[in-house]
Length: 509
Image 1 (cartoon, rainbow, N blue to C red):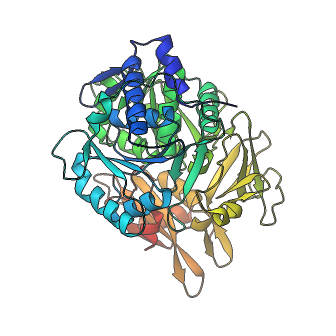
Image 2 (cartoon, helix red, strand yellow):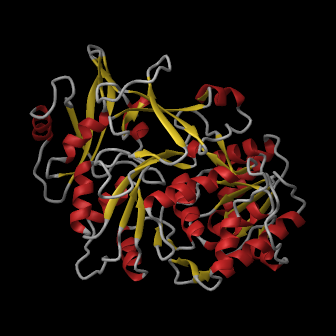
Image 3 (cartoon, rainbow, N blue to C red):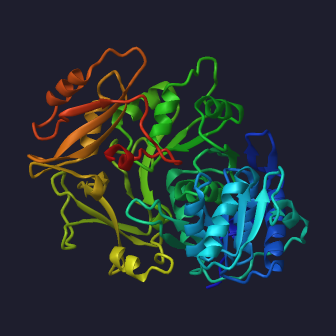
């Protein structure tokens, strides 16, 4: 079947060409017609560079219009987009370019030096030299091309007639278990994901979504950008999460949807919102990490009108896998129920499905239209996680009798103390109940006697007088003896990655 994901843009442009598709944090506004035409020009220009269907185009940009032009342009041309984190260093860039075999690399002028070092390292490792295009103005080093040159080509018109199962995006995983691997996401897979999850969340044509989640990430690309364009909504592009700037943007553009990870919501709770009208907010979409119940409660008290709906997904599942769909149907602490067309199970180490119940913790496995084709050029790694059509997530969880699922922790984050399993999230939930705690992450520390010891890294609110001993005692009163942390480390901030996820790896180190 012929189908191109870029049709979500062309169809919405036909429906309302003059409607704003995006506002930027530099006060620019682009309509659907603007983005459709610009991406059509980029599609033509990429093909004129000699690229052929299926070739890879790497893009390392923050949330700026040029990302949209490149994304939809590559799709329209029948090419594969490879989104890269703008914070990557040269050796990391080299790995992504070489592994994907990218023929074009679009980067930001401000990061030109690092980008070019990455290119040279990839070429030295055997990659055919890619065409380097620099976007967003500024001086360009020798050997690079101005991205604006692409916009002088003719609009390609209709998107290329690719197959629905062709790869549209090569989305590299975070690499927490080795070097990053590229998950192959198809045109129909990404279309189904943004369509189905958008319907179940109740996204509307008049919604205005804040796009501060990075577009190189599955959550930002599929759930925010694709979801809005599929519905004909509007997004507000914000390059980086800065608390006060985000609050200002939410108010200025009367945003109705905020999508973020838990650390972003925790930061918003610290913002001064006096005199700021945020009454337009109606949905707070949350994913990427478990949302503490206490934080959810505080967000809804602080921002009346918003309903926080937690979901679950991965790069390998094109973002959404499960969602809570409404205030009436959600279960706080749950990641919700599977989206339409997706099946989720909890299985034991032998792959047998476990019955519902909090004590029946096993690995979460997924099957459906959202499951990746596989890892790019990695049949061995693909075979490890895709078994009999089920994607093995590496996440531990359980289900209940109503079909809701609950993530307990990553397999690798599990702390085994004296033979007992301690799930960091459970300890963190207790810590968040303490009135002085504004951030918490629990990890295991090697221990000769117990195997591992439970360590909690904690951030306290301003003016707090709580001590390490106070927090240990607080947990001890509320948890079984084997669970509570024997060690508390007070920190000014928890280390987070570009998407706001807490970097437990750094804490363990």
